[in-house]
Structures are given as C-alpha cells and as structure tokens.
Image 1 (spheres, rainbow, N blue to C red):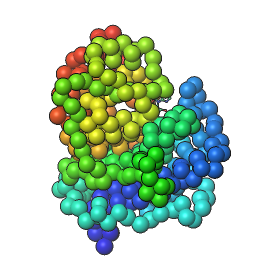
Image 2: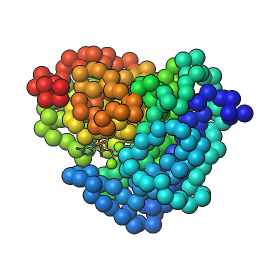
Image 3: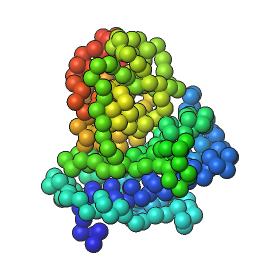
Amino acid sequence: MAQNVPLVLRLIASSVTAATRAGKIIRDIMSRGELGIVEKGKNDLQTEADRSAERCLMASLSQQYPNLTIIGEEGGSHCEVPSDWIVTDCDHNVLSQQCPLEYIDISNNDVVVWIDPLDGTAEYTQGLLDHVTVLVGISVKGKAVGGVIHQPYYNYQSVSSELMGRTLWGLVGLGIGGFQREDPPSDRLILTTTRSHSNTMVNTTLDAFKPDEVLRVGGAGHKVLLLMEGKAHAYIFPSKGCKKWDTCAPEAVLTAIGGKLTDIHGNAYEYHKGVEHPNLRGVLATARGVDHSSFVKKIPREVCDALS
Ligand SMILES: Nc1ncnc2c1ncn2[C@@H]1O[C@H](COP(=O)(O)O)[C@@H](OP(=O)(O)O)[C@H]1O
Ligand SMILES: [Mg+2]
Ligand SMILES: [Mg+2]
Ligand SMILES: [Mg+2]
C-alpha cells in the first residue's frame, strides 16, 4: 500500500519512525554516560550520540530509498549498524494524508534529505536535554518543504522514559501533525537566539529590537519549536555557523504552520544537493502571524553588510 503513496509523503512517514528510533539511541547513550566527545572545530562538538543517531537514520532511510541524495551533518561512513537500529516501518497517520498535488509526480532526482542527527549537541553535553532535537528535512527542487522534528527529551522532568519525547512533522501545502500550535503573546516581544554560539553581532542585533525577553537556548530545531508553541515571536541568529541540516526541517515545519524562516535579509535559502552547507547570511525565523518583513527592516545596517 505504501508504494502507491507519493514519495514525499512516504519519506516523511519513514522519517517519523527513524527519527524516533534515533532519539531512543540518544537517550540510551546519555544513560550509559559515555559520551565519547570529539572536538570537530572551535566550539563545535560531536558525541557518540551524534554519530550513532546519524548511522541509524542513514541506514534506515538509505535502505528504503537507495537512489536518494541524503546529506548528514556527521558525514558518517556507511558501515554496518546493529540490525535493531534499522527501522523501515512508516507512520500510518502520515501515509493516510492527502498529498498536495504539487508533490504527486516528484522523482528521486528532485529530492535531497538533510539530516541533523542531534541538534543542540553543546546543550546535550551540559545536561540541557530538552534543547535536543533530531531533524530530518526534505527539500524538493531546492526548497525546504517537508520536515520531521523529534524531541527525545520532551517532558523528561515529569514523565517516565517510555512516555517522554514527541515527534512532529510538517509538509508545506498540507499542514502539520503531532503538535498543537499556539500564538505568541500580543503585548510583549520575546526573541530567541543561540545560547552557546553568541557574539557581538548577535547581541547588537538583539538590542536593536528592544525585546521584553530574550530566550537563549540551544538548537535550531528547539528554537523553531518555541516559535510554534507561542513562546517567542522571532528566532534571530545574525551570524555564520548554522548549516543546511540545521534549518531544512525547521524551515519546512514552520512554513507549513504559516511562519517563515529566511536569511537575515529576508531571502530564502536553497537546499539542492550542490549548495554550500553553511547558512552564510544568518537565520531569521518568525512565528505565524508575525510580520517577517518588519523584522528584516530592523536588523542594523552594519550587521546586514557583514552578512551580505
Ligand atoms: N559558530 C558555530 N560553529 C559551529 N556550529 C555552529 C555555530 N553556530 C551555530 N552552529 C550550529 O548550529 C546549530 C544551532 O546552534 P545554536 O544551538 O548555537 O543556536 C547547532 O547545531 P548542532 O548542535 O547540530 O551542531 C550548532 O552547532
Ligand atoms: Mg554539530
Ligand atoms: Mg544542528
Ligand atoms: Mg547536530
């Protein structure tokens, strides 16, 4: 039955189960306590959880979709993985959705899958566990259109390990699942930004908005969740450092819900397979109902010039 479902919907349905399995691996590694931290660069860590979660996602998706381009943050080799890390079942709720007409005839060559196996690594190593997400983004003809965001430690302070975690998905033109959206308050301005990769340009920009509150938290996925939960109006990161795997899934899910994610000039990023990986012109994302262009206009001129 699944073979009759259009590729994009099948991919989202497979990514929901694979991301959820990867989240269990992330929790198991933290419980064992051996994080195997490697420094990839300045202020840029990788743990055994990043590596293992990526191998789980890569093996699960490439077994089902052998002809697809799949790009993962950790660039892991295709070595053997434990058989119980390969999940090939699909989420039935996603499969039963009506695929928007524009994606019915999409072929393998039109699609690139962007995987961030563990977004918020710095916070994971510091025990800020609900900042962590697993991101699977699906681009079609260079646009971020589908996404899965799994938050393995959602509710971890109030429920037992079998009950914690949540997985949401979105497809532009269809909508979202696994999540109840909320609007941010109308009487105050709340911004969210990086916690572990801040610099003068980030702080100068935030000051220009005169916000009532700034939530400095980890992860691109987590920050976009805050926008969709009505906890912040905008995610502002006027700096290089985020990559395509950080923004593809969050952009797709946020767009599917009526929000927007662009560079700081208000222009969309491309996600085709030849694109450069860094988001060199920063990130600006706004919640549904928030005027994105008014945020673009308030970014200081010198910051725009530095990221042009
Ligand atoms: N200066 C920088 N160097 C390396 N990675 C950066 C970075 N700035 C942002 N990132 C990456 O962008 C993501 C979101 O950053 P932040 O949590 O600071 O908002 C993180 O993804 P990962 O945790 O998947 O590596 C982080 O590593
Ligand atoms: Mg990383
Ligand atoms: Mg990331
Ligand atoms: Mg990561």
